[in-house]
Length: 312
Ligand SMILES: NC(=O)c1ccc[n+]([C@@H]2O[C@H](COP(=O)([O-])OP(=O)(O)OC[C@H]3O[C@@H](n4cnc5c(N)ncnc54)[C@H](OP(=O)(O)O)[C@@H]3O)[C@@H](O)[C@H]2O)c1
Picture: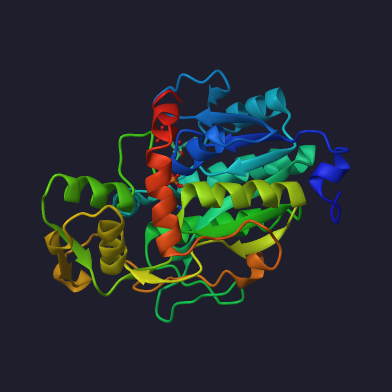
């Protein structure tokens, strides 16, 4: 099937996509995206209302095989992860189980059933010493989260009908946690002060923008490693300032600090910004710059997405 698009292979019919981790920030955005494709998903902890989602622990091989056979999807988008970096540092075996063994369970059955497999990885596979990383740069993960996500990538590389997407995301959550944008917005709206790093850079993409790109990647059946992020890097401090400007909130509440002032459990890369030119040559979806992404975040927040998210 390699070399032709999944949609051509299916004669233009809708693609059956199964999102693993459908209640996560990215997973929920995939479950709610407006598309002609058939979207199903899995959850692990809290049960959503959607009839299109079933419970699954990816660490359990028999359970994985049963669910994948039941849905018989054309494509799997594997978003499930333990995204709390400090929890991964405290519980390395748990992180390894989910990121490596869980991924292995999914890849094995995908291979057996010839299902296109898309794995979501992270910008933190890089050590952040130089920034603007391309797909040809050598990863050097600094913490357990990143090391185990990178080991998950290496499991996926054993299967040719697959792609690995490295990214960094923000957006709205269904689970009781905040993305960086939600946290800054919530704090400034309460008129409280917030400390943001002036010396940590990233290239965060609005999760709904990433979702569009992922659907196009599945349709085009692209294989290999791709960086999909905001096409420009920004410090966490300036990300906060831009958000404050767009929402007309008080920028004075933002205190610039250095990451060296905090005693974080897991070491963080200082500049893992991604170069996205490879994917931009292959897909039509426009990757939004920081300002465009934040405007879109604001518009989505007032356009009914939050109500749909609540009812997931
Ligand atoms: N968030 C970021 O800033 C960021 C940055 C770079 C890369 N990424 C990558 O992007 C992807 C999506 O991130 P996200 O922020 O959307 O994640 P998230 O909101 O933390 O959601 C993760 C999902 O994985 C599920 N999950 C956890 N353990 C599982 C297990 N054993 N079996 C099945 N499902 C399990 C979670 O379910 P429960 O929570 O209900 O248990 C949840 O649905 C991840 O692969 C992450 O590594 C994220």
